[in-house]
Image 1 (cartoon, rainbow, N blue to C red):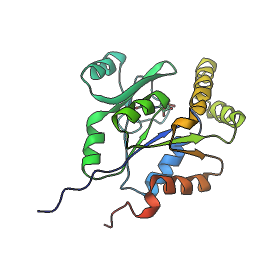
Image 2: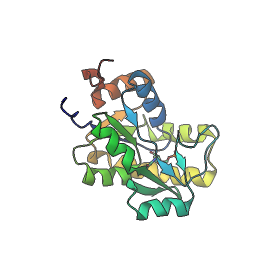
Image 3: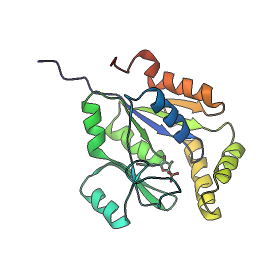
Image 4: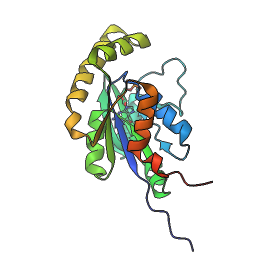
Length: 195
Ligand code: 5GP
């Protein structure tokens, strides 16, 4: 009987809203389909183009709270007036299959994962400057002024937590950042099995 696979590695990616985590992660997944990205649940409403079950599981607040009470989330947190959480089962299943797993979550969630998965690799993505971050958030054009202010305030808190992370990546030039991300996550060292 073949030996069971050794558990996959868990990587947590955190960084302020608008820093470009989504783009970086999408590029990484294109290049490494073996990597598995967790789909979070949220109580916020979908943005244009977001698909339920693909970008997020969009839940009502009562449904989200019900899943919290039954231990259905690996971690969860409130962010800019909405709740976000990582469904526990799929993460545990993919790790047990030996697949590298990626969580793209905010600071409070990253702190919870640090307690439950101390071996997880925790990475903070930073903008080249705070002004550039604000420009990107406003340029996205999806949030109202109040939401923008909440996100900017939260961004300052996240950036101040830099010392808690295993590594920091500045997302300035996209190509350079993707290559660095690949190296940090360990995907340049052959974590993707041959077909
Ligand atoms: P957005 O509303 O821009 O999609 O996400 C807002 C913030 O919530 C981002 O910083 C994102 O990383 C974070 N987030 C997304 N999913 C989760 C999750 O499952 N748990 C936690 N703690 N944060 C999440």
